[in-house]
Length: 423
Image (cartoon, rainbow, N blue to C red; front, top):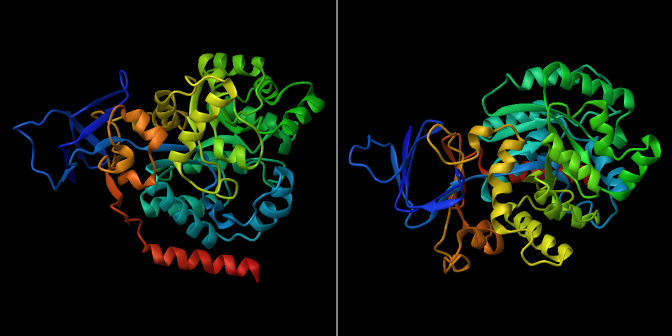
């Protein structure tokens, strides 16, 4: 399948962020050409006139729990500990494979309409989750949420091997749910696997003050220092949230080249705090952005995350120059891809995967065009996403979804399950 995108603007990040009027040609799953119009162009199966709109790499949701869409607006206005113990964990125990499949499809649809082309998911029932993503044509990286509640310690390695071989759209990274849910013996088990496979490791990290204080009381170390001493970060990885980071923690992240994945909307809604993004960025720490799950957000909207990531830094730093639009946009597109090990999905260039989006610039909130990155971060919204392509296939275009099922069927199945929860 050959597709030509022409007559528009193209946003690329390497060697530096720039907007050109280049065409993009897609052949099967990859980009085959980026450049000016050519007289010797091959025959195309479809030619898409951008009509002045913007073609750019898709956003990457670098931390989420996709099937948590089943808890959207069901467990609101509660502190984190009660939210988990009274709402999340009891209801999760009632999930079935069929429910996870349906609610994953629902989440994927929301990702696509927000211009998200891949997610880094830590949740349950990985077979059902990965089947939903594959059937929808969506790219996903699974991250294990290994903890003390896992009955079979050896399942983690089996999953690592299984999902890294299952399908081109699915991969798997080592991870733990968090230090506070994982015993030292199990932390050491994961560290041994990281050493054996020379693999990065990710985890919920320093999300709340109570989490950090608890780790200090147990081990005399902050969570980043403890996990590093145990060897979990020997081959890279990073943390989700990274709100309560000491100066020493930030230096460690920079030295180890770890990823800090910020989830600003979730951290605000759960009153966890504001991650020190400006300090992390100035220290040289690599950044990515996640939505977290729909139970704590409640939207899976990258535009909202980008805006909050930026303006919160301006507020807490007392500096309007903090959290620049370009830094935020790079984190949403390039940073997320590289954190997830998707280095061939991080930009628009020949040979890269065709994971891209079209932004409608012919909308009031995108005019005038003084600065594209500023428009996207400060004024952009889901209404501007005209098209989302993953692996060379259009999965969302002009409000229509192409995910293997009719949206109405997915909505009906999702609501039927929720009615069962309330019965």
